[in-house]
Image 1: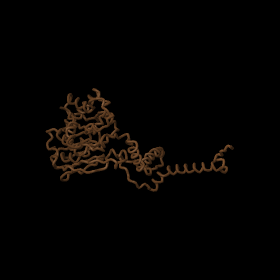
Image 2 (image 1 turned 30 degrees about the vertical axis):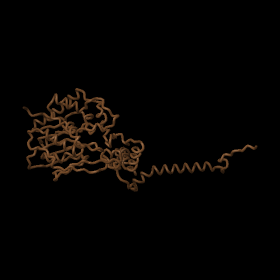
Image 3 (image 1 turned 90 degrees about the vertical axis):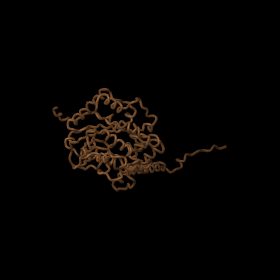
Image 4 (image 1 turned 45 degrees about the vertical axis):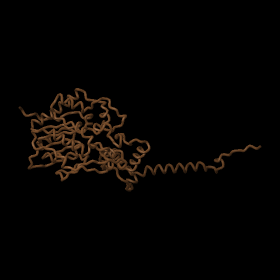
Length: 392
């Protein structure tokens, strides 16, 4: 028997054919890679991206101007980098595809700033919200005393000017609906920072802290009070908060009354996911039933967009309603048209800090300061230099 011999295929090819094939494949790979790199830039220049645009909870970076001065030239690469990151071609499409792959294939959300709860509920995870929910860092006695001193200083300074002071804390969504949080996020202490602050002030001060936790917890069995895919309360929860705030206005402030429930009609509509789904780029995947309150007749102040940070000024000359100054955040946006009906002249400012100038300008009878609960993890309580109190 003659043994068969094996000749490698490459030996039967003409000299150089194998290396030429490798070169062609490498060239194709390089060209495809360069095309992938150039496509976003080409799309920006030629405006090829016609897909749906994401709606994000922030303003995208604007195109920087090229100014031929040393300082501006030195900062141009950094500012252009932010602009390019926000506007490169097919950005929104790629973000959406990434979100769908993470959700459908891996069962996770693509953005760690959002926590996926039960039954389609989403929760904010940044701004130390998760730490706050788990009660991992609580107020110390000196911190509680510092809060008392700061709040009382504001109250006393305003009282000398004939104004009442209300400090309002809007509860985090997970505070009211903790049962919808993931089971893995356990709480390590029975009380939160807000619980400790409320207890301390009740025992050591008469500052009016409007605690909305009890009001909302008692009512959540009647209807849903927060959006499922948004970190904020809905109209039903916001209106209960509004009425609790108005109930805390001292009786000495005449004319300030809350709107009744019958000024509104309970309405519902199906909607795409809201602000938390914008952070993960897949709004249409999440849907919820939006629970609104529609006024039966128009209010004096039009609805304010939730993320509108511009000052809102209300002029109500000729009325006997008391004037008000409000320091607020996004939780108060939905309350502004209602507050404008309950007060006269008003100035509504998006800021966490207490400020003297708007108070001296408006001469209000009521000053309301509102912060969302999670800011108790971040804010260091302090006052601006307060003008001296008048002599007794």
